[in-house]
Length: 318
Image 1: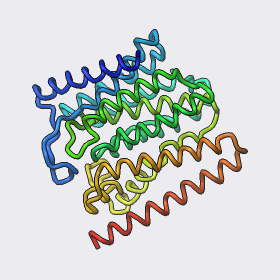
Image 2 (image 1 turned 90 degrees about the vertical axis):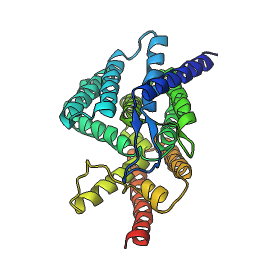
Image 3 (image 1 turned 180 degrees about the horizontal axis):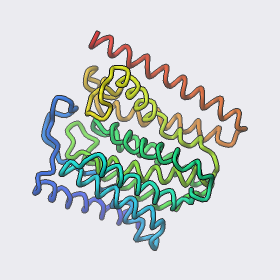
C-alpha cells in the first residue's frame, strides 16, 4: 500500500510540475540537432529527485550527505535548464555533490589515490548520462534496467536500503508514463538525466564499496560504449565534444535509419539487462575469470557497436 501511495503522490507532483513548466515557459524547442519536431515541456525528470526525497523522509532521513549532494546537483541542473549556466559553475557543483556522495559511501576511508580517479569517473558518467538523453524513452527504459539489476543484487546481499531503489523506480514509472510514447508529454531535461545518474551512481558506489568489486560498473556498459566511442570519433574529427550533436548510435538509428525511437530505447535497456545478468553471474567467480569475461564483454560490445555504426554512417553519409 505504501508504494501505491508514493506512486500516487509522485504522479500528482509531476502534474503539478507540468503546470509550473507551462506557466513559466520551461519548454524544449526543436532545432537542427533535435530528435523531436514539436515544442515539449522540459524538466519532467525532476520527479526522480522527488522519488529520492520521498525515500529520505519516509526512511527517517537516511543517507543525508547523499541527499544534500543530490539536492545541489538537481537544483543547479534545473537552473541550467531554465537559464543556461556557465560550465565552471556546473562543474563546481557537480564536484561538490560527488564528494558528498563519496563521503556518504565512506570512500574516503579507502586509499586516497582512489578519490581523484573516482571523481573523474563519476562526473564523466553523470555527463555521459546527460548526453545519452536524446530520444523518447531511453533514459527511463535504461534506468529501469539498471535499477532492476541493482534491486536483484540487493536481495542477494543488501548493500542499500531497498526503498531507495523502489521509490526511484516508481519515479521512473511516473516519468515514463509521460515520456515513453511517440509524442512525449515531457522530456527529462538536464535536471532529470543528471538526477537519475547521480542516484544510480550512488547505488553503484554503495554496491562496489560493499562488495569490494569494480565489475559492477559494467551495469553501465551500453551507455559507456556509446559515449566513449562517440567522443573518440568526434575528437578524431577535431569537433567540440561539449557541443550538442546527433552522432550517438541511438541517434543514427532513430533519426537517419528511422527505427522507432521507443524500439531503440527498449533495445538499449534489454541489452544492458542481459549484460548485467552476465556480470551478476560472474561476480563471485575468481578474479582472473571476471577480468577475462569483462574484457570479452567490452571488446565484443565495441566490435558490434562499431560495425553497426560504421554501416549506418556509410549508408547515409558516405
